[in-house]
Length: 338
Image 1 (cartoon, rainbow, N blue to C red):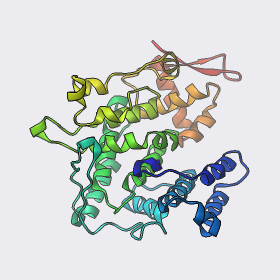
Image 2 (cartoon, rainbow, N blue to C red):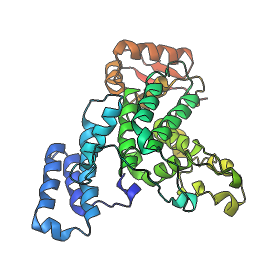
Image 3 (cartoon, helix red, strand yellow):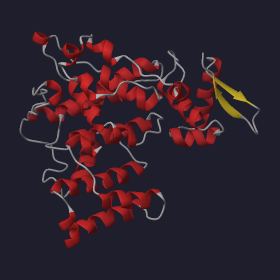
Image 4 (cartoon, helix red, strand yellow):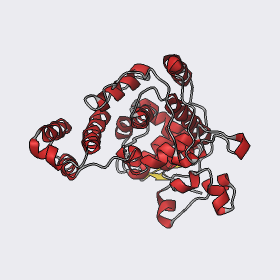
């Protein structure tokens, strides 16, 4: 995720992360090792620039926050995430900016998005989160739900409440939020596609009618569909550039919608279930990855009760999308594809 701001982690961080992944050290120990490393003379000599230290410390902090099973859908949570990520790195960590900003964007040929005015940030955060908190995904099909999620994410990012680090803060907040909706989302997709994620947010918040450019969430929707549904989309940054359609001689949105399906992708993708809800798609993804998962295991991953999981599986079986094979004791789930 650090590449979104042109940051590259050090070899020391990668080695420390490997020890954590292999179970040799806890995330708390990894964080302490990285902090100690940059306090030592050897560590200070080895870093190429101050931003390498930023990349390492923030990477460890992102992991620490994401392993915690806590979340509140509030502006205070967003502010807390920013403070924890950037404390000791930015002087304004965890503090709402008090001045207006512009950022020249490559994807816009040097133009900027219009960000929220400093004197309206708190009110805008309260409004957007209040609207989303009251939104009901229960009976919404997955296409409409992902479109709605993309717009909420874009609106949240457009506020840009902090001086720096807004994209990384938004990403961590969205991962935590998506988990409350039942998706087992990890940081790897955001990390691998961090620059695409940011450019997609930019395009979702920029219009220039004199040039035939309108804000669109299609790129952000493709990002979420890849992450949540396992679909494969063209996630190249160049196709989001405002000059892309001129260079390629094709319609911009036609280009964005051109899928790159492979045999492996087809095998791993979820069924095209137009009338499935987000919760149902989240469950399908779990049983796709682990067909022998019990309802108790599914409930733990989704953060739902076993009763809720049972209801969802019954609905999916009635829709002809999910099938329980080989009985209860030694049974497994089969996803039915057309």
